[in-house]
Image 1 (cartoon, rainbow, N blue to C red):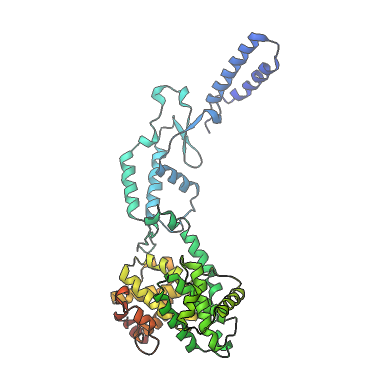
Image 2 (cartoon, helix red, strand yellow; image 1 turned 120 degrees about the horizontal axis):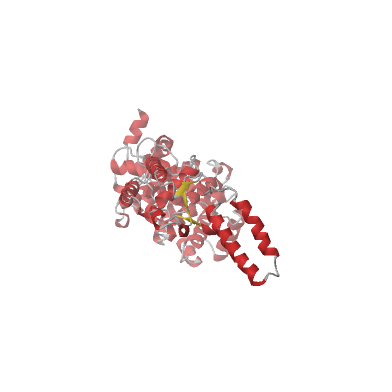
Length: 433
């Protein structure tokens, strides 16, 4: 606050103010006195304690505003650790600029910001140069340097800001994407089932589940459905079977209904019931299918909003800066995992991260997992190794045996013959050693 040298001016204002206000019968003479009193009040306020109506703040540039916030809260540190080293330098430079400013024109408040008094009551020579015009070239160069370094890790390895490219894309919700995935990580356990739930089934076993999943992957490809539909279909099957005993002859019906519900949830164009009956070779009637649909929805309590591995796959592939080849290999590996019952012991986020990690090793031929991937997945390389080694084993035997639906799907030109790539066998060798 600007304090006048005459601290008693505020005390001398009060009698004049009340004197002018109480004399209501004085006519023009008292009106003139009131006007003179108001002018004295305004003058004393300007020379004494500044009143909000006569205080003007200078226009601050974005860099000075950032420095003021940093000085106000020294303990503040961005969650994403952006510009960790650059901010310290910019704060010091801004503090020096504020310190070297003319003390007769402005003073620094407790947050280090400069406040100037009303310019109307000063001579033109006393008016300060606007801060937006002071040392423009150095500030511009500093800004350019800060844009080059987006995020920096304490170890020196850069952590890329993978959402900066979507800043103008409203559909990408870049402002909320970190909060969304943090929420997905918290609730993903709701969609998980016990890795031993098949022990509760009297007429089913792990192999039957694998046959059903392999067949549904082919049906999903024939209908040309969205990728997320397949992941939700398998999730609905496991959650339903974990709560409801099903006889062997109704297992295929459970798979068809799960795909129908997943299509209603994800797809724009949903396959009609007659098409599903047709692909089952008319093993079930329309009435049976609709009754099973009601039973599944009631058993699952209509809870369809479950984060599957697909949700995490898209995010983790973006963190890995994946090209089309890496993306196809990752989805090939994660679809192989959908068929395997033993993969239920891993949460969806870990399965997705392991698929991306294994795909990077498959494409590059060596271990690859940088700080950016570790930061956005919250999984280290050691945490992914067990799941990744299992995926390499699935890749090795993908073209053998009876369950080759995923292999044949990714051996087509539509998927760039991805299944023919060599598996990352060096991961198995390193584990054995």
